[in-house]
Length: 122
Image: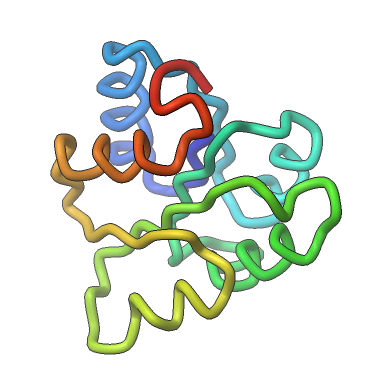
């Protein structure tokens, strides 16, 4: 699942992940991200941290606090790579952290490390 409000970033990531065999469910703001995650129960969530309605920090905390969604791995994505942001994302409940612009091979390595099956589709 990808939660990303920027249309260009969203489209690029969805296309590139789909080419690698991943099925990607999309949400465009934090509130939608929470409701889609609760309904779809994705294998993994790529979460932009700068989102409208609910920001990524709130989304991560909400999902990790929910009995149905707490086990879903979350990778925080942010263009604001400030000192302390990685730890703040981990503290909010994210399982990993990556910076934008996305370097696909690095991100794929993080995705594959967190997926229960070790890769593909979800």
